[in-house]
Image 1: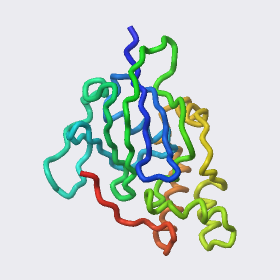
Image 2 (image 1 turned 45 degrees about the vertical axis):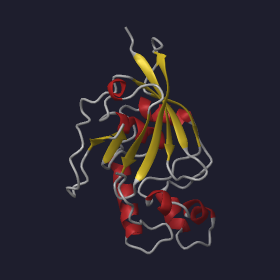
Image 3 (image 1 turned 90 degrees about the vertical axis):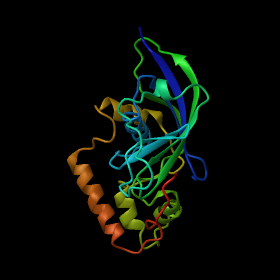
Image 4 (image 1 turned 45 degrees about the horizontal axis):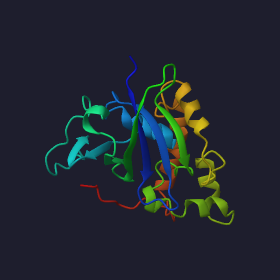
Length: 218
């Protein structure tokens, strides 16, 4: 018998205008697996640490600083066991850039036989590129790539693959990444190398979208 599907709305906290994705995820999905789905919907590579806070309980990976009790394991925490319809919870991805999502369980649906899940059914606007410094760091990103006179224009445009439309969203892009095999976090080695080199160049320079330290959500 097919299980139930959780319809989640994930919104990037602090992004203006709002950036969000609507996901359909099986109730048996663990909190270890959920970030992989979320990062795929964002077009990110899932190459950083993450954590969740649900009902006052932290799940995920410690920050390495030893502050407070360690989070609970996410390997056996399943979405259907730790949330219900109406639950609002938070996730943080990349403890440096501090991408924070507000997730809401909008409704719980019966699974449709033969349908492919997880799925991204709706959304608004393009997610900012990964490793651009978080919400604060990416504030000037669209302006920089849209202004040919900006000193970072060429390098940033190359870094994002030649084009970036902040207003664009196509759920087919998410489906294509999923069909390729194992979601977006498993990029081809060549893509990872190119991204790492570009990020390294930018981190070594003074940039209007340079990385700024961000507090870890409690």
